[in-house]
Every structure is written in structure tokens, then in C-alpha cells.
Length: 308
Image (spheres, rainbow, N blue to C red):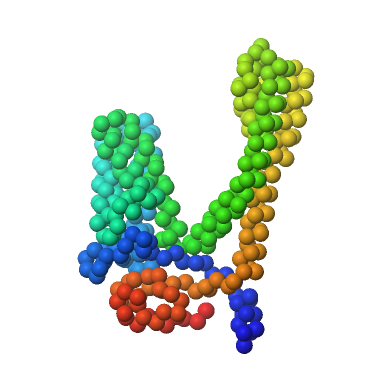
């Protein structure tokens, strides 16, 4: 029986893990604040899903307003309309930020967290624009709030892959640091060599300028604002261009190998929970254990899970 179960788990593909609600903020007791918490912070409920989708749409529209307002002709023709729209979005996001702080037990933890800081920075530039003209361009920071789209539409596969990429980058940190130090040494040496070969008469007025040229050349960008004129300088530039192709492939291989190793470790390690947490139909609470039969908050019976 155990062998059959193990064989079934190996044949089933990994299901994405659905992240639970941020319990570290503290759920309020049943009441108005709890209902508001379920709408704002719980994405597994219909109301919470509608709220988050509407919030993302408002964020995208507000960014569109900022982008359109930067066009001189549109600003001249529709400036007042765009200003009204921007202030409407700012008041909406301000109310949302206040509601988030009001419906949790530990508001300071949310306010000092990543999303709390982003939510605050999303509304401050508009108020600062009253005191400092031109600061409204900082409103593009709202694009960072679109990170919630991963939670809203349950694209947890991408969140899981993002987590794996972060773990791979962290594990490859020392290798990448050594690689970058070698690249910086090559840029310093070759930049200094080009400064000696070309000299100020050909635009290489200093070693830092030559290092800038070496960086642009080695990364195969090639702005063309500084170019070698001597035959020896052109030969060095050709060598750096060819060297740049090989250099760009090194960090990719390091991270890819680390991600493959971690993927194999997960496959060979203990089996993960293959089911996502359920939400209670009575109170909307989410994040129950896979084998739970009753709601952890209101005690109502949970709906039986459908067979995969």
C-alpha cells in the first residue's frame, strides 16, 4: 500500500502552493473589522478577489494617467481632467491605506513592511506636489503594487518559480561576486591599456573614461560616443567584444545550474503537500490545513475536497 501511494505521488505533477493570508498582521475578532479584513487581505473569498482585481485596475489606470500627463500636448489640452483623475485615485488609495491599517491588530507591522511602505509612497507624491512642483512623476512607484497580481489571480506557479530564482541567486552569490571581481579587473586593465594606446587626443581623456568605454564595449552595448582610432586600439576593442560574448554567458550558467540542483533536491526530498488550503464558506477564513474538517475560526464544517 505504501509503495502504491509513493508511486501515485511520483506520477502526479507538483501543484502550486497557495500562499496564506498574512496572519502576522493579526486577525481582528468577528465583526466589522473582521469583515473588512476578509475583503482586503483574503484573496480566497469572492469579495476579496473582486476587491483586489478592482484595486489592480485602479493602479493601472492611475499609472496611465501619470504617463499621459507627461505628454505636453495632452497636458495642455486635458490637464485639468487629468489632475482630477489623479486626485481621485490618490484619495482612493489613501482610503485603502487607512482601511488596511484600521482592520488589522498590528498596523505598525504592516506600515513598516514592504507593501505598507509601497502603499504609503503611492500616495505621498501627490500631496508633496502641492509643496514641491514636479514631484508628481514619482507616482510611477505605484507600479510596484502590481506585485499583488500574483496573489490575486493565484498565479502561484510564478511565485514559486520566483522564490526558486531568489534562492538560486542567493546560493550563487559568492560565485557571482568572484565573477564580477574578475570582470572589474579586466575592465580596469584593458581600460588603462586603451588610455595608454589611444590617449586624450582620441577621446580617452582619463582612466575612468577609458574604463567606461571598456564597460560599454565588453557588455556589447557600443554607444559609439568614444571609439579607438589606432590599429592597436581597434585590435584591443575587437578582443574585448569577443570576450564580452563569453562573459555574458557565465552568470547565466551559474544560476541555471543552481536552479537545476535545487529542483532536483525538491524532487528527491520529502514530499510536499499537494493540495492547496481551503476557505470557509461560512466566514470566508482561508489558510486551513489540508486535513482540516472544521473552520479554525468559526468552527463551521468545511466542504469536502473534490478528488483530483
